Image (cartoon, rainbow, N blue to C red; front, side):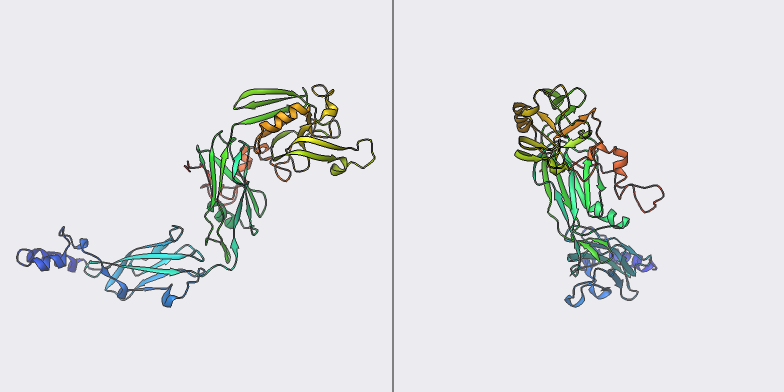
Length: 419
């Protein structure tokens, strides 16, 4: 476009300003610059591909805005949906066409603001609104655990309503799952399988932290004709740092609160053939009374190892039935020998104290047992037994060797959040 006409227009305004005030006002704004005037309505100069006739736009198709004729050009386009997400796009060098480069969100409302200029450089503007058609399949995330106060070892979980196998689609989902903590921590999601993710910090949560998880999936395109749906956010509070370490070698459990020893308890752990699992476990829940039977762990009824006992003050640490509980029948062995079928047993008084002291999310660690290490997933929360560098490789956002599609935008440095 030749800039000469623009220069002539400005000069003519300047020349007329001495004698014709009205003409000066029409040609320029109050500061005398031609671009400071109120933009004209550019409706007649533009065409938009979406929302014409009130029809809902197909989110599978790109958004296009074109300039009609050669007497004007598009200078800028901003498209935002109701969730505040900006739609990326590209404008041609001649300003004749803008086209979205990212997928439209489904089932949402868009506001599109277009800036133009005519052949003389005068600014124009036009705002469009339209809605996109809802998705036929909606992917949602259900966060866990339930809202409440938990110990420093509590991982977050996200259960997806539909499986996501493609790595690029997983990256889209993971970017939309936001975890924030006050104070801020470093953490990462791990894909346990196609429908479940776990989140944990690099180290335990800080005592007293406040944590929130949200899913910005609603309307977001995840994969081929698959879009996100609305998901309920989660808020947690983190209590004191309570850690219990059961030493199967010394037959004692040491309990600390915020680094200070608050109790040392004689215990018995699993005997040979039933050794207690080593490693870090997380308190799953507490049950005042549990009926424990050997048949539930594969012991045949009537065998020498068979048992059927009422158990009190039972603090669960695995789904398969490992507890810290009262074992009055083995008080003589507590602090001396390992005689249980895998649980950590203690006197009724000590078990009651432990039961009242800990909460879900607190840490229970077993050391010096001949048992296997606690599974990372599937039998409770063994998440902390996986080294951090390996944990981060379970994220779809962390660059993998030989995988050029992954990105490094998942350092997951969590931003502080105030409730």
